[in-house]
Image (cartoon, rainbow, N blue to C red):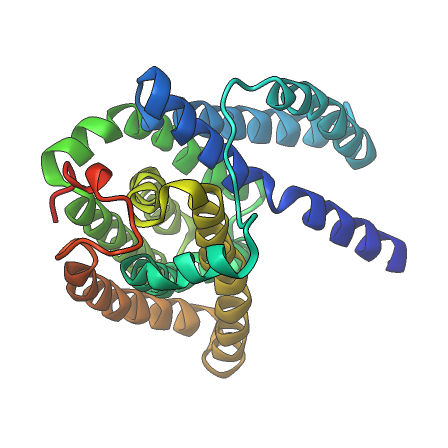
Length: 305
């Protein structure tokens, strides 16, 4: 058990910076070469869905064991790692000490966006931790649990393809507000479920909730931080929303599950998601209301509130 915990810790330490750095590289590349972030990001969701379903079926059929899957995952990571070394775009993080940190701290609209986004995703993070246990309590087996993660990921694929057009029509802020509205609807359905079917319908809405938020938040960060610190901005978004946010969300949800039961906890999550969505909708008015002295001015011109 100690060995497994240590290995999990090492894996998490190595894996944590990959997503924000990949996002920063992708956005930097698309800024120079042209193209749409959503279309590029859709391949991540498709791969997640296909790999998850394939791994689940292989485990269920006893074709492979978990050790083989982890070994294969490590082997498949070599190719993208080598490719990243030859990537034609470079991004920079906090490389100038206190000066760069001061620039980030001066980007007040970015910090406000970070705070509001972390709050809005607390319920999302708690659901990701407790869903499998909840589905089991509702009578769902391994098939229901597999569908709960595969279906949203598959729904994300076409959404990512059309996300740039949606963002261009609605603007960044309205697109982000739409994503948190989808999250409220998803958690309401899951909380009202008395069996796995309605919970799976709710999880299907997690696809739009995540795809729309993530696909809009990454370009949003790119407009809110100084041009030379975009990698740091993406890292802070990931750290705040999905690392610190997960710790806080899981702790609070655990207390709620003990006192209210799992279904009561989920209904509480739905109410909390509604309140945090309202706070997000109101609070983000100030994010794109006026230019920030530390943020890149020209890239904000196309972002409507």
